[in-house]
Amino acid sequence: MDSAVVATLKGTIVGGGDTEVLMKQVKELLDAGETKIVFDLGQVNYIDSTGIGTLFRAAAAATKKGASIKLANLTKRIHDTLQITRLSEVFDILDDPEKAVASFAAES
Image (cartoon, rainbow, N blue to C red; front, side, top):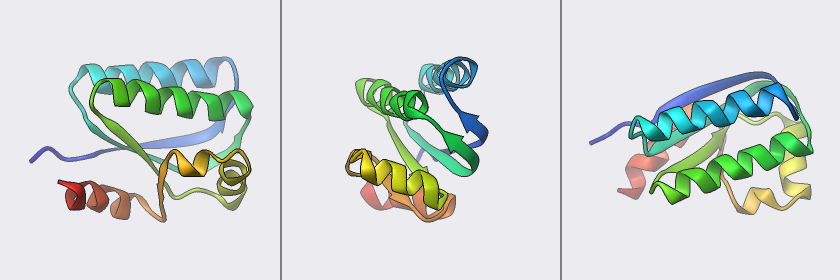
């Protein structure tokens, strides 16, 4: 059984360099055949609208490749932002990366 990859994101996810790096990493994971990806957002202190859009684009790219991305360990601010934008309905959001990884196993 293939395991999930946990990507720990740190700092900010804002328009420009941050979002380009994130999409490049997602593309590399998908090209390597990864289908279960968890973004650990516990160390992300700020995300702007472009960053949120990038998370959405990453999820869409994963779906096209038959993969999925789950979010874990969100700060209150990021969790609130995803709820306000209703993207909390798009993503599987779990308390911590271990629960997110385990949730993939429960689906198969």
